[in-house]
Image (cartoon, rainbow, N blue to C red; front, side):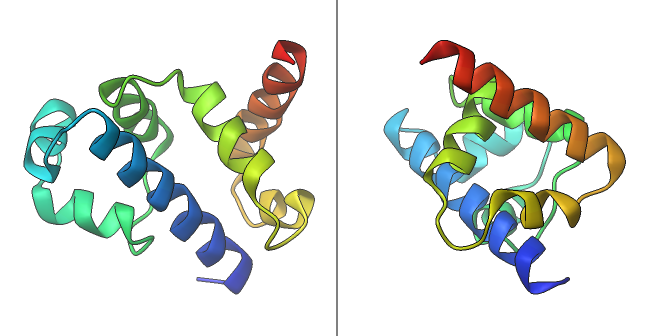
Length: 109
């Protein structure tokens, strides 16, 4: 995985973990809610496993977040690499989702 994409998934995984802990959920509980194993949730939180877009949405909702706002919050908080470089590492569908999340996040301010 390219370094920028790796940083993206590590950062996003940390946000998933933070939200899960805030809701006092175990990895197993989150996994059961989204039909992933506890090991998969652990790997997502550590940035070692990518989530398909539908799985990301399910995870966000399970931890009480709106998917686009959740992603937008991560992107606004990252300073490790320019957002556009991170976006370019994603596939076309993921790129559009991220751009929509950023636009929605900016409208809420």
